[in-house]
Length: 150
Image: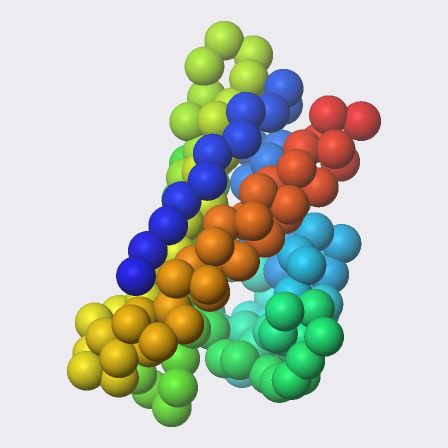
């Protein structure tokens, strides 16, 4: 299962990248992840750095922590991370920034890793989750847009 949303912002890709990669402020933008912190001595985005996010699923619960590892980190262009269960990646989130003439197209996407369990999940309720993720990604990007365009 996967999905993507693109929002055009009147701001530089570098400015937007700084907002997206400051995971300590995720609670200002994400409907579900209300706080995050770097782990293992990391202080910012670098390939392989880990952080954890505090999630309130569907904005009501359950509430839990997820551990994530940065998989893409190119300032002004892209930021990505995988959600881990133990050392196994189960979901991948990615932001791609495409600048053009004073504006930047920002695409947020997700992709669940293929597995028998995820295939079963996709059949039984996965499409509801996909729809929720698309709505929440748009909400996240619109909140970021409001900040970078202010």
